[in-house]
Length: 141
Image (cartoon, rainbow, N blue to C red; front, side, top):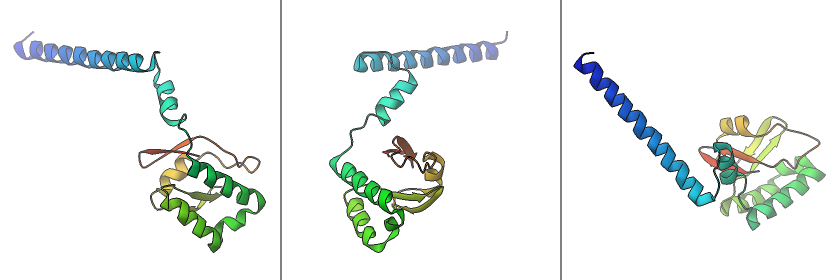
């Protein structure tokens, strides 16, 4: 082996050892913080799905689900837009969809991302819950 090949093998070997060490240190820190060895799936769930819902979020969910259950077309009336604006001033993002179409979304959200990440529409279950990603942020639904 010539000198270049030896250098390349030594460099790549050192790089591999450094990366493995960093991953091991990261997982040991997670173990120290959580008290258990978390898989990436468990870590994702704990970060995104176990978020406590705020009072304003709960109030908006109850208000809009009631309207959606009684008469869904009322969600698009101008009188409801005032309520939506009030919730958006409190920092909430609102999405109104009818089947597969997004009829309204808060200005901070991206429609293409919503269409990809929102769960499938189910007319029998308007109480869909979960987490969606939009512009790098996670939102509870």
